[in-house]
Image (cartoon, rainbow, N blue to C red):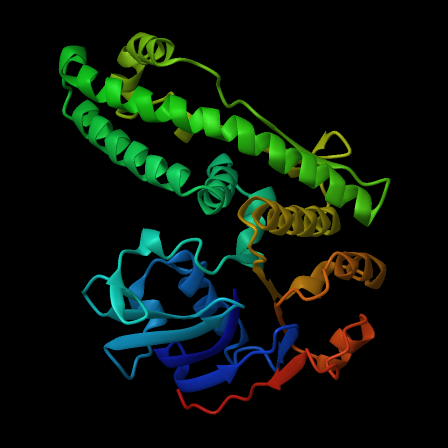
Length: 358
């Protein structure tokens, strides 16, 4: 499914803004601060149900208003789709699909996107929780069952941690352990399958880029039954009481990315992080496409900032024909010099100017 057009109302600095996209490569260019990234952020919200930049509502609502709206119009060979997002200060966000209210979890997967942005670079540079979030988001796009089980697992985990903070006995917490084990074991089984699928695709994408570049990852995900899971929770109960949190389960999984068998977070240079991150995200694209039979729209925010011309050219070769892509950059000439032809019928470029006043 492709995005055809989008309307923004009081979203960040866009008070009343319309944009129509092409099915191919879309280049949004202009000076820093004109709202290029905000357009990608709005598209991302319509896909994932939340911003990639902030969780604070007052940051995304224009200071001239107490509410915002994003309307996206999508299409494929079978049907058209309208996804709307509304947010009011002090109130919960609201989504609609074709005019009918929907919870955010039902938005995920309708219009998949893959985002490459400085914020997402935490996938390789950040903490273990950042890498867990990457894999949980990917697996949730691949499987609605995974998403539902993850939501239930996190809800049970939150309740268990609350009881630990109130110093409840093991006997009182055991019913929560039974539920946690059920969903924890199921999540780990699904992770085993999807970890292998992503690993194979990641190696394949690395080879397409350069035979001398191999990106891989390690994980400590477990393979247990429910009784074994409960037994470990019981053994770690005293530690959990002291720390006031649950120290075992899928929420503690550790992922590490490797570049040619070396820990990327420890040994990777800025350029190597940027390269590895790009290959990881293109692997995410291939995984979603293979497993869901949907081609995600690719969002590239400031991709070329720390990639030299040779590396960026190799990265661009990974873009498949007929893949809708939205790129932000400060200089259109720079984009063209890197081999992107915006004059093709399927491509398009937009120049943004600062038209508002502070």
